[in-house]
Length: 264
Image 1 (tube, rainbow, N blue to C red):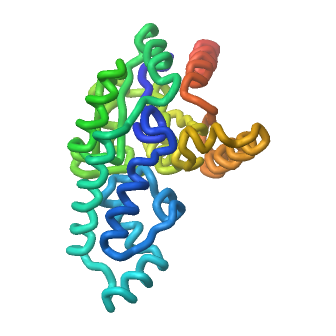
Image 2 (cartoon, rainbow, N blue to C red):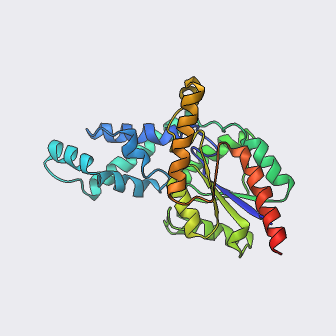
Image 3 (cartoon, rainbow, N blue to C red):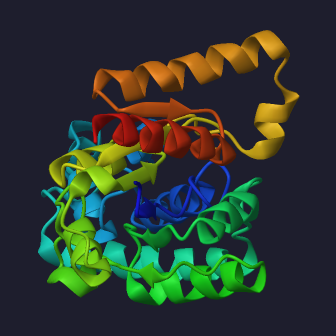
């Protein structure tokens, strides 16, 4: 039987479209004179933010912009400055708006009813998470365990360390009894590295990169096209299951439980 589900936060359970970090990254880099595209940011979304900034600074276009502006490549001090600016911008935005996605409470209540433990991993720091989890708690979403890379000596995604930490805390030894749910490829890689089942969420995901309003304004055909693009992305990394929205997870759990019953 499935004993635990481990959710991501932004783009999975809160912040439809995972917009908060994108806005904060753009502001921090713009303040340094560097223009970023959404693609620049989203390709490594889900990593610990310090690591993510390092990845962005390694992008060819960013290096070229930096050298043109400063006549040198970015160094560790530059990275620290951008990270500090990013943190400040993100904390401000998180305080203003990080709403639960549709279906989260309904899914959470189902998991509680069936005795399935709920934990979370994230690319956010503990300070960032304090803002997010407090707002989520006000709406009724209170996971049993909320873990950041700071709990595991800075080993952020795609390392399996956070999931392994959660399994130990929950006293679960069999990864087949655990599901990791996320909206980025880094989420899936994290789950695969921990040998747990992986589930990718399509709507409101960072991979889709649209706000709720932007998605709703698309006609039915374009919505289907967008969903299919995200599904193909998840399929390229062999995600175990891909679902449109979070409440579809209930069907996955029931299917896996039935499969385990037959196995035994």
